[in-house]
Amino acid sequence: MTPTVIVVGAGPVGLMLAGELRLGGVDVAVYEQLDAPTGESRGVGFTRRAAEVFDQRGLLARVSGGEVGDEVHFGGVRIDPGILPDKHFSVRGVPQYQTEAMLEEWVRELGVPVLRGHRLTGLHQTPDEVVAVFDGPDGRTEKAARHLVGCDGGRSTVRGLTGIDFPGSEATRAMYVADVAGVDIRPRPSGERVPGGMVMAVRLERGVTRIIIHPDALPPGTVGRVTAREVAAAWRDLTGQSLRAEDLRWVSAFTDATRQAAEYRRGRVLLAGDACHIHIPAGAQGLSLGVQDAVNLGWKLAAVTGGRAPEGLLDTYHAERHPVGARVLRNTLAQSRLYLTGEEMEPMRVVLRELVTRPDAAFRLAAQISGVDVRYDMGGPGHPLLGLRLPPDWELDLPGGRRRVADLLHAARGVFIDAAGSREALDRVSGWSDRIDVVAGAWAPVPGDDRPATLEQVLVRPDGYIAWAAPGGDVRDALARWFGAARISASAAAGPADT
Image (cartoon, rainbow, N blue to C red; front, side):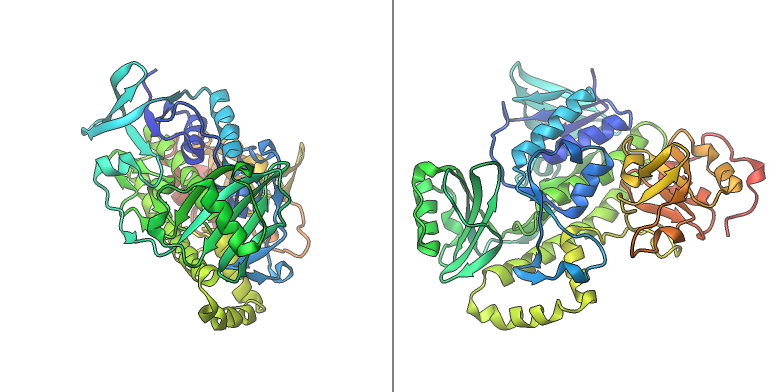
């Protein structure tokens, strides 16, 4: 098979993107330089919004283990979840290798080839295609495709070969990370400041605990090659608990280096995930941010390569995701200062503890971490919920029974929901029936939330965001913007614009 799109990198982001493209009808192949998964896990969970994204594709039920975190915090400053108007809990205790295995099983079921042992060594673009050069099991090969997406991590070869700048700030501090087996370690899911630094502990699978250690005196330039003995010694120094080197099944280190790609797209080459942005881990935002990149890009790239939308739709990927990435980089840097700086930061922590007792301040901080407040520019004024995600756990009463919004999005298609019984509205969207699903029903009440009742008619993009809601001008304008020209002219009976 000659793929229409090449994805470089078989981590969670590359696999998620490949699945999205395949659902959109694209022939896609994933190339990965590693011969086999490492079994290591830099990430151990994901945010609320990432969980919703998985749920929208029917994947959340495939995630084994883990738990919904019962704490919300910003840089260690705890936020009372009882004052928040929405759910912000993250999913924790899920090793990244399990998430990768789940996603690889999914994409293989969809018929996507995952080709391992292929190291990208070169690429060039022509007006009609991008050509990638790989060193693989059969030697040097060239593969051509209409587009190529680099999902190959913070040291992205794709980004380097394409010449995309990666500006940002150098590391100022460093941390150890390790998975400890067979040792009873007290959970510290939000981290604790202790004399000499900060420690964190999160339970993974049975008998294994993820620990993170930040000794105040650890220079960022000393973590190139970390040993189990160094990590065990640092844990003992900060907690008093002894670990044997053999108890640590995996050790690594990371810093607070923070960078973001200047461009998420250059011609036929695009970037997603850590290839676009690196930052200190805080609130499981790294993997989660990348997965949301993939889901934002996937349906757009599928529509363009399938001839259903103009090339310009791809420009909205950078326009929408670059600001989201920049905001995550800001909040993770802010959290690192609160988490990891010494007693000189305590006055700021005290002020923040007072501020987060206010519902508006608490929501603003919690929503940044959970990702539920991401709002895209849908072009002009409209409904108060325009540009926000449609909560996937809202339910509709349909002729065949009650269904959740997440269930309506499993096929990665747009959805038009008519809760007003308007035949006229259904006529207006008929020209896009090959790209969107039309659902007519009534919203089920949500205790304490009157927002569903305000959405009599709503157009939802495949990534779950509200592209139009009545009253808001003519729905056909939104359909043309996000889904391309109508397949057939909408019925003349559709009449004037919606009111």
